[in-house]
Image 1: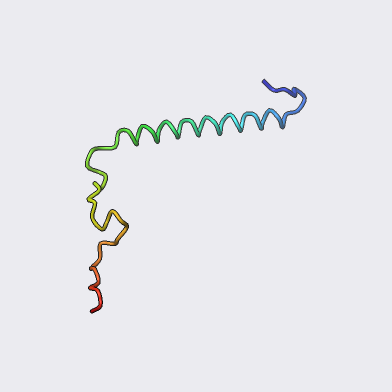
Image 2: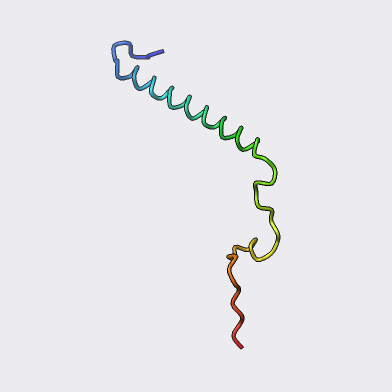
Length: 65
């Protein structure tokens, strides 16, 4: 597959890129598998309350009178 048979550096670069591509594909498939197989109840359900708007769970301050 080497376009330049007399250039060993091109062959090494091709093998490195092929290995990197294989690692990325395998990692993507593994991540997809883990994401699909995530057990129910491990995510936080949206409540629609202040937490959904990004508020912290701390004590709310009272407005000044």
